[in-house]
Image (tube, rainbow over all chains, first blue to last red; front, side, top):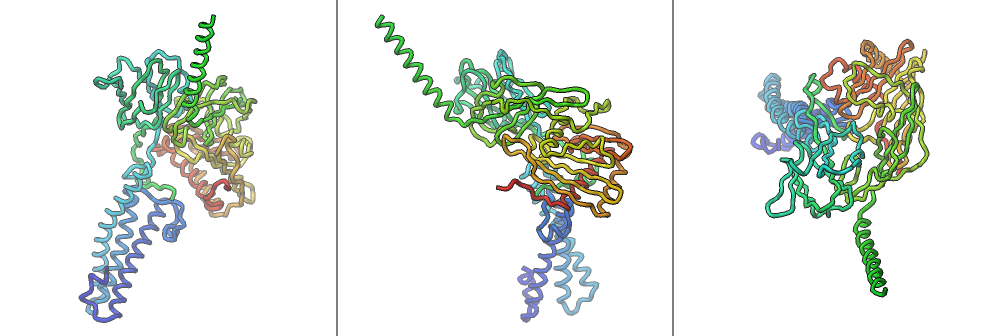
Length: 253
Length: 283
């Protein structure tokens, strides 16, 4: 790339090799510094990030922003400095100035790209986009019943670890009959994601009669159904940031 | 009479066919068998009844009281939950196995704190910590062991943790020794010792730990356990015993408790440095 952008200034093989070397060095140094800073932010060593021996990796927008900025600036600086040094009429001040300008451009682009990449990485690992903090998860149980069932099986999950919702089928605005069918639509409590359904009683509803939606469950009840328990989770709200360090989090590699 | 016999035979045949058809339908599901065992948790003051539930995947938890019926966790399950994994269609069953009552002594004092933020304290965490210590065979009581410090933490911040690490530091007059233990639960056998190692700490690391220890001196024993799975830090400096049971998420926003977390992370990081971070059962 560096060779292509400076093709007009290349008159011999030596110059071609030099521009190629500058491009390669700036890319490698930028990547190394970015990885090293990311590793250091994750509480590991700078060198561990460069060598790839670090067991942790910084995640989230802010971590990506910092490591991207550092990497982008380093790569940009070397590129600007080196390319200016190839001009025989430039002095050291010109090289520094060009390095600084190019470094700042690299820092801006590297920071934005690193931030977005870090944020996406965090979301992919069930973390918050900005800080990369693990989203606090709470197990949830929703009991759907006719309100007249002796039932004790919900205690399969220890009390202190789950939030419990009771959803009676009658007189409940969250339960609506679907037009001209026997199906019922049961809205999940706000923010809850359902992952499993458990039935307890004499008769079981066939699996085909239970359909999970994003916000509601569609179910075709049958007579004498004991009870249905929905298993899922929801996220707690993340607590407010209390220090600068809270902006940066890491995950296992 | 013949008519009656025919009717009776017909009914018997119908019931057999129904049983076979219905039975096949249910039996086509995989069985998710949760085993439970009665547990007596012994503290210096009293004894408490608990039941330990353990899934085939090694996930376990303690429930207050004795459970007497296998119907406790029956039914049919589609999908997955925090406890029931991997996702599938299951017939849920419970079995009282082993049938004898397990006795777990408390290897840490149970401190009931007036200024606690925890609304539910039923010793389940203390029981879990003591269970882990018992299973890995390290039942020291720091309260009565002068100049020592111990941390015990679950690997998972939330849900059912199946991996625990324990670090103990023993401050001797001429040296400081770091002990590292880890235990993992992968099946019905529950927590099993995975790693057991020790080494002398270098002076630089000792100084760091001593410095961090000085910073937590003004902080009284405290618990702040939810949300999340709490970890334990306890130390005996020769004159007094302190105990902190805290979860990472409870700590957020509480600047006053930051030195406790810092010390815990420092010890864990030091342990990683000396013993590495790669743990798993051999295949």
